[in-house]
Length: 372
Image (spheres, rainbow, N blue to C red):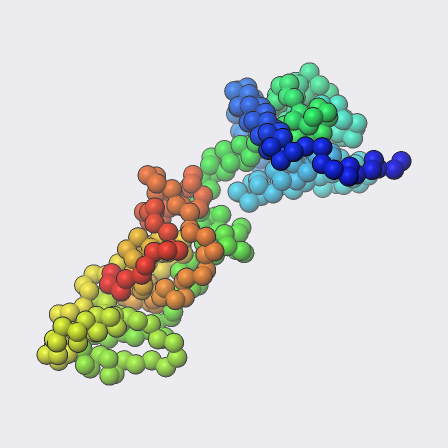
């Protein structure tokens, strides 16, 4: 059967296209509100089953619902619940060997009567696995077979023909996300846990540790606070790319201050030549802002943006310098501003508390300053 010929002229004007698009989104928005209102104790039972699962959460579905099931499996896996997708058609041809008795199977089907899904149900029952259904009706074959059924209720597809899965798959995706994220929160899944599963890309950079990006101590300029300014700048030069800051320590080796090239320039501009032969602690920035080793880059960048500083020392548990974050090394790491949330100290993943207070500031566009 050949495809219908493409219309030579568009059947919708630009205004009609936008109006129709907005109607589709509004319809799906209304459907999501309806599904949210229908959630009841069955949803809580499903979360409890996932939380108690000692095996894997296996998602399954066919067609568009199968694509949503794959996404739900990915979300579960990335937020602390071991999960993978099982294709119903492949399952009855040997892939049921992937299922263990301590697994939980989450099956998505709008009608709950899809042939490939219904054929799978007796085998899963024989295996003794718990089943969670996401479907329109509890009275469907899938709804009756499952241990828990999250009922979506009647939904109108946004397709003009009322046929193409659209509203229903949006609802399934939202319910799947809710299951994954509520379960994740019950596990106290932290940003540190999240970072372990997301080492790549921009998200991985935001969740990486300062230790991975700081200039190591061997590449930094460090001096005693008791030395005079002239000594410090003559004796503490470093080959290669140099930072614009000198880290100063007390007699115990703990960070006590920071002195930048701009501070030196200000001494000359103010005709304070005599200060060059005085202890540098008299003109340094005492008790500069620091971050401990192991801190997340997103928190460090937020501090640099909020304080408008160009250098941020990294210290160990007793306050000794271990390295330095320089803005020239940091800028460009984040194509967009590292996301932060106002009020609750969250960053990147709003539900997980940050290890240090987040701010509304962002790095791009924030003019760096040299003093902490």
